[in-house]
Image (tube, rainbow, N blue to C red; front, side, top):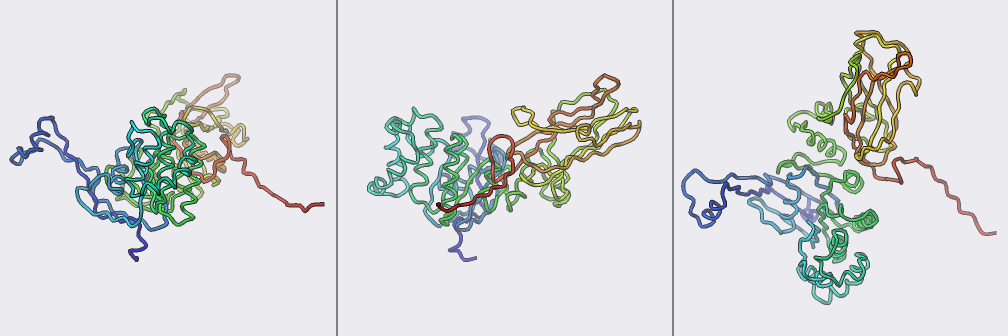
Length: 418
């Protein structure tokens, strides 16, 4: 590939820190007073041999758990940190929105910080002044721009910081999770700016835990874990791998087929029941019949469970429900409502239940609960119930209002004047 097509090249980047047992050992080491093979510190790798190549005009996401090295990598790319080993090449004017407060003097007011940041990026006072109206319009923080930044809320601060970052005409924009503190309207405004940047052929690199945004805006995704690069590829594939990392089920040496058999199970699930039945196995499949915990909005998926019948049951009812992360029960159904299984189940038998439906929930995180219940005469019985047992991520590039997408078909006709 022509080097002119590369915006950012990262080769063999390592970043290590010395972790001392005692503060005085750090001081002695700084003066070169530590001798011999036994060192009073451990070497911690924040990044270990990371390679990355980002083409001009790409929007690339970096995902991973806390402590995986995402922010460290961005700081090295932007020159805030020096790597312990390796090489970084950046081709183009770069603008970065890193952690809250980076590059700002909290004693200065907003206007002063705009000039401070612009100067640090290489602009003259006249060039900054020319861009000032656009910056203030985008930030939209009113008279607070004349107050010291230490008086700002986190939302006001990120508005100003992002307004500065995008209005100095960068060729490469780097954003590190900062948008998560803005309100929903400002986030929409920022993502609209992302779209503008993409259309203008600019390069965007951003770290986010918002998997829906990663899917919608990114051409490719890099997955980091504990300082190592686990993989790169399509947003869906990397998100699937990320979900396995979250529950300790990722093995980079195993083949893809084996990986797909893992599910994201709550290790502290609540379960109870009479013991007359046992939900022995449960998982979710996507439209390709692959076990997963990531479902694309609008696609078909199945919830499956195998239930051991330990005693004769008159008419067992098998059920599932979805909750959001706040515990609000959103939807669910069961075999009695669906009139799918209305008969006796005999002891020592096994029932396999599959619920197949279209995913119309908005993008986000959800918890699935499963149950096997029934009525014996007029008494309601819970044979086995598993609460919040599976975590599902719905990935969407279009979130409408509320919990559900009504999947509307829109027809518009323009009629001429009389």
